[in-house]
Amino acid sequence: MHLPQMNGTTACVATNLILGVLIGVVASHVLPCAYIESKKKRTIAKGDVLPDATLYDGSPDMPVQLKQVCQGKRVVIVGVPGAFTPTCHKTHLPAFVKDAKALAAKGVQAVICVSVNDPFVMAAWGQALGDGVHYLADTQGQLASELGLVLDATPKLGNKRMRRFALVAEDNVVTVIKTEEGGALTCSRSEDILKSL
Image (tube, rainbow, N blue to C red):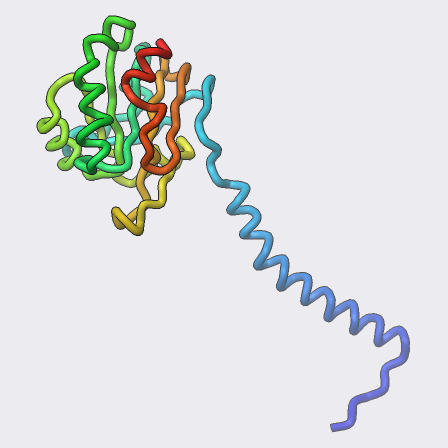
């Protein structure tokens, strides 16, 4: 096959055309990734307003809005990777159940536990641990995402869950926030929250 000889202007146009195509291909792959990274939620911080996430109270047909639950109240919200998991079941939540009256004495009107579990599991967990804490299911992980506290627990628990945390909110505004790395339990215990109040 005989290729026509190109003069300088034609060669320049052809080169620019090829470069344009290459840049377009690279941009179409790199820029969306950069956009996705930039859209990741930042972790909730002191002074932030709680997100208006939909949670479930004991049943899939019992949705509640977090902001409505917390409106006009001083609340403690405890997030955990999973109901009935060892640290959550044996240490973290039992301490909040035990300290419910001490927290109330400091002006806390509700202690709410949230986890990426189904509402039936959360209800059963509440029955197993006793009164003093209100258990709400973040069934689809909406709250975990909105708080910027998603924990990829796929290798151990099969899906994305919630990082362990505890926060205090007054009329939906965060006044104290304690977040853990992974499933650790070092700063989000009931005793830590009591000291912060």
